[in-house]
Length: 59
Image (cartoon, rainbow, N blue to C red):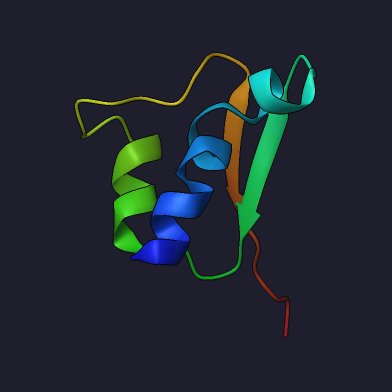
């Protein structure tokens, strides 16, 4: 939980934190809460310009 709370600002609005126009947060096995956050199933949503990608192996 401490990790998640520490990373939450990056999950939601990395562009504002680093001064970029866009950002994509990449995970290989995202926790369910991130899928819900980026799926707009929660009351709080990522900022415009904040994306999310799930990385998968082709093996």
